[in-house]
Figure (cartoon, rainbow over the protein chains, first blue to last red):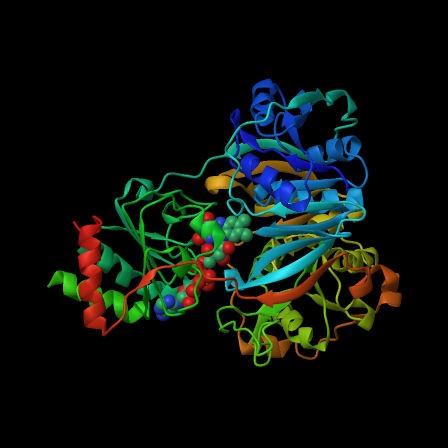
Length: 317
Length: 262
Ligand SMILES: Cc1cc2nc3c(=O)[nH]c(=O)nc-3n(C[C@H](O)[C@H](O)[C@H](O)COP(=O)(O)OP(=O)(O)OC[C@H]3O[C@@H](n4cnc5c(N)ncnc54)[C@H](O)[C@@H]3O)c2cc1C
């Protein structure tokens, strides 16, 4: 069995939660140690944290890696990893940037947005993915005979929070090789603050593509007014410019923690759910199989364009 | 600027209720309604806007069969000048790497400064653009939500966590995967599609593209779908049932109990 590596994301000196998830993913592929890879500049503290989770940690510490530019990190990994390596990445904006190209350069197989791993059968690792917004799941095999790059959905694996390892840290900064690249990081632009701060709201009436038309936004606003709530939304509503970006909930929007989150015409994609941290979730959706009903506390199968005005009317008495 | 945009025909999730077939190993595919992958419309729109600013032309390409003709024409009606259909029995069953290999053949037949894909399509791998770039040895950026053309290079924004934007400088030629929301894709009506209905769309086979048939298709695929299934459902939500009035009564009680009414 090839050696398994997990790429550790970290932000402002803190390990990403996926560090505790990829170690679990690795063990689902095969018994045996999973090696963490930590890259950056001045990352001793981060490497030590990773060593509490992983028995082996490879550290690549050089100013060229101060910002995690996937094009540069790919070069370092290709120089450092043995051929046939199995590399685990979080399936997020960084993993999506790095993974596909890395698999080509390593001449290995590639699969992403993996939600579970059912072990290995000979040269085939058995993966579970989802399609159509999570309405159906798919068994997928990936041939790992010449290695693999596998991107695992954040939050899909129950994390190993034991921090019981006392891993050995190996410094491979000297082996990273030529780190020049034709893509140069310039700066991070933070999102503009909007007129509303949905992260502070106790009650959110959140609308998704089920609202169907810009003209129907008023229906949600009227309900929110009657409830004393704030209107938030899923991403397609912001993409369509029907509401401002400050109202978006999800991994590429805001993380909210209201007392009550009422999801109206929202299917429940993992990127959307990634922005809801706690609270009582009420889901209203016309499709009884919508994945949102798996995570909601209370569900109602209804057409929101009829149900929301009816609820508003009742509340207004 | 010569721009190639790679597009895909996918089941339209807004138009279909996805259900399992009777054998329970695949989704029901009869009667599925197809359209252009959502992300690809943003990529084509961005390409058209770039060409409007700096000149050049937009070509759209898909790997598919004759059914893909309509999506190519839709994107041409948006303003792409040319359409290309890469089609060959040898292509069927390709995994992401197979598709990228075919597209590399397409790229080699033209003179493109910029290649775009959608950030992901129906299967959600988000892989073809990054693989293509690595095969071509040109730089790549994913989840692009801003493109600014400069002399021999681009300044691009990438979407990262929490709505932050990562700005980069990238040299040409390059491959970008485009994220939704970067622009507002223009509307195309039946009229626009009719206008391009007689434009010839060249078909390109494996041999036309110089692609070794053994390097693509099902036999070369290292990643394979086994079957579809519906996962065991957890406990899930407590479903409120009854007439609308009864449901609303119960819901108001639940809202009150959880601090959902002021
Ligand atoms: C990198 C990346 C980042 C992303 N970040 C985010 C993010 O931060 N936030 C986010 O939300 N998404 C994000 N997405 C998009 C995400 O994958 C989904 O596409 C999106 O969340 C779907 O939004 P939705 O649930 O409103 O729409 P859909 O998935 O289309 O669901 C609409 C739902 O409405 C129901 N419906 C339709 N009509 C009615 C009606 N009349 N009455 C009742 N129900 C109805 C349907 O049954 C369906 O369940 C991201 C995607 C990517 C690739």
